[in-house]
Length: 251
Image (cartoon, rainbow, N blue to C red):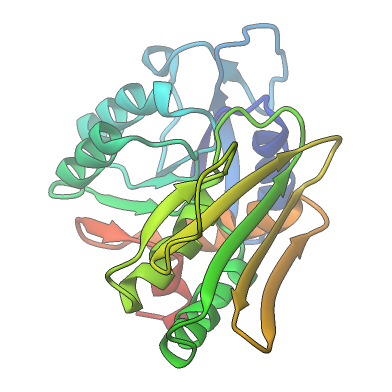
């Protein structure tokens, strides 16, 4: 049994991860850490700080915020524990810290934990290779509580196109008289409203045809299930940086 600490345990995704752990014969959520200190459950204690954790932990999974990254990495490095990082909104300095930590521990990081989205990225790369000369636009839709924009998934999809068409650059939304569209733009647009779990459309627009590749998440459980797969995958991995593509390919 893999003992898991859930960082951001009282958030919507933290609760979903707990439910997925409960349904897994290989994983047990033994405690959580959250800045909200108003939770009491003898079977699943939630602490306000990593310093208070008493349980033996095998893997830390995080769905909180980039602001919590230093605390997570410090704890994992202190005990040699793998980390599964699922938060979005990382900046360059966060990525640098993750990369540095991965030299000493196993770190799993993905902007989207859905297996379907990660298959979608491969499809987008194939489309980008075949549809050179088509305009590429990405539209992402999320609930009105999401704090970062564009979504980590939208950036993963844009990066997938840019891996193939290296001359591309990103344009985040458009306003006013911006002139004609440059052929090398990848337009990225964010929609926020209601309780939309997550929708992504990648549009390849040519002169006489348009191809749209889409993914829609209907329940946050899909991300939690992916996180559990990542936990199981990374448990005994040596130091290094891993992502959902490694899980899909079984490396």
